Image (cartoon, rainbow, N blue to C red; front, side):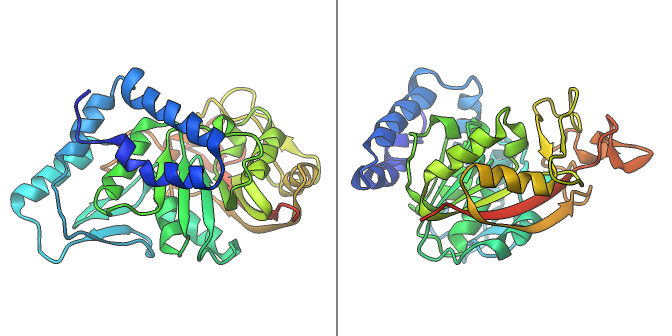
Length: 332
C-alpha cells in the first residue's frame, strides 16, 4: 500500500529506546506486529483511513497545547479556506471520534466522551508525572497520552489494538515533529511478561472487559518498575466486600462486560494481585453530559443505553454506570 506514512520512521525513536533499555523481546515483537498491521495483514479500512490522514494539510508552523481540557493545535498564521476544507474532510474521514476533545487549528472535535472530565478525576491521584515513563493501556485515540505528555512525562506509550484509534492519534502526532509519545496497535497480553519498564501504568475503562480481572491486574503489575504506580479506573457498583455484578448478557448494551465489583471488592482484588498502598481517589456516576452522541460520533451513546423512565438503571435493569479511580503501588 502506497502512503505517506512511513511506520519505520514514525516508530524509530521508540524502537531505539526499547533496544537501549534492554527490552529486546518487545523490540522484536513490535517490529513484527507493525510489519503485519501495515504491510502483510492490514485492516480492510486502512487504505481509507490513511487517505483521510494524508488529506490533512501540511502546517509546518503548528504548535500544541497539551495541558488544557481540549488538546489544541494552533498556528501563528490563519489557515486558508482550502486548508480548512482539507482539514475538515480529513478529520471527518476518521470518524467516529470517541475520546477527546480536540481542536485542530480552530476545527473543534466534540467527541462522544468528555475525556477531560475523567482526566480531572484521575490526575489528582497521580504522582508528579515530570520525567516519568508512562504506559496507557487501552488508550483509545490517545487523548490521555497527550495530557500525560503535557503534564511533563518524559515518554508515553499507549497501547490499543484499534487501528482507527491509531490513525486519530497520528492526526495529532503528524503536527508535532517527533514527540516522545507513541500509540501501539497491541493488547496488554501481547507485551512480554514482567516487562518492568514503566514508572506509571494507567488502565482506564478496561478491567470490566476482562474475563479474568485479577490476571489483568497481575499483567499490569508486570509492566511496572519496582515501586511503580498503577492508576485503575473501572465500573463499580455500590456494595460491601465480596459483592460483584456479573451481567447475564449485556450491560448498557455492551457485550463484553464481565465483572463489576464494589470498591471494597476491587481493593481486595488489588491486594491479592500483589499491590500495596491502595487508595480509592474518586467515585463518580457517568452522566449523559459526559458520554453522548455528537456531530463527530453519530451512533447511539449513553442516553440510548439507560432506562428511559429511570436514568439510574441501564436498559437491562442494572445499576447505571458508576466509575471508581484507584491508585496502587507495586512493592519496591
